[in-house]
Structures are given as structure tokens and as C-alpha cells.
Image 1 (spheres, rainbow, N blue to C red):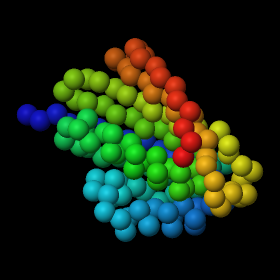
Image 2: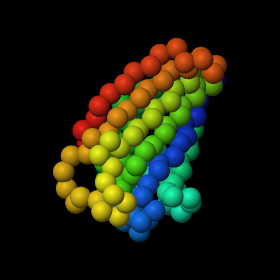
Image 3: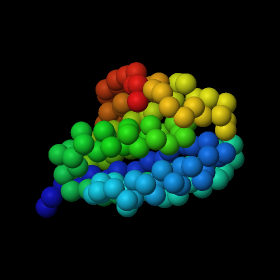
Image 4: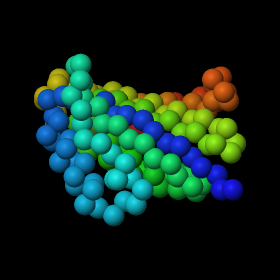
Length: 142
């Protein structure tokens, strides 16, 4: 039996930018990103934010992780996003990982700069059961 990796999460976005974010999602759908673009939902307006949900099951996802992470971070940079959470669960090994992204230079809602680097904070947690066994923190400039 091959190993399955369940992968799910959400991206918190500026509710004033739903149309912009829909266009970004559509532009990603038009690119050849197998296994990535077909898992994204359109932004859903909620209380003080909108969310883009995603979920997928991969076979041996660890082989594709580095490429997927680069694509996800490029996608995150293009969105008008505030934060994101990615959770992975390997059914064979029982490994659990959580990645938390926070936009450090989040502007006033509705006033996003058109160009320039964005500063993000990334926290990566490895869990065994519900216990965090590894923790890493990174500054990202996307």
C-alpha cells in the first residue's frame, strides 16, 4: 500500500479584495500546476475576513513538497492575503506538520501596494499526536 498524505488549510484574505483574489486564483488555474490549482476554492466572505480553503490527498507527498511549497508561497505573494495555515498528515507514518504564515507588512484593508516585497513570518511545527516535537521560525520576503 502506498503512503497517502492529507493536505488541507486556508488562506485568510482581505474581504475588500475578493474580486482581485478571484482573478489571481483564475490566473493560477490557467497555469500548469498539477495538483495545486484544482484544490483551491474561491474566497468566501466571512466575519472581518474572507477565506480561501483548500484540501487534497497526495501519494508520497514528501517527494513533491519542496516544489509545492515554492508554488504556494508564490501564490500567497500574488494574493491580497493576511495569513495562511497549511496542515499535512501522513497516514502511514502518522507524521503531522503545521505551517503558519503571517503577513508582517499587512497594509490598511483595501490599500494594498501594487509592487514590492512582502515580509512574512513562517512557523513550522512537527507534531506527534497533539504534542509539538519540532518548531522552526523563518522570516520570508516574497
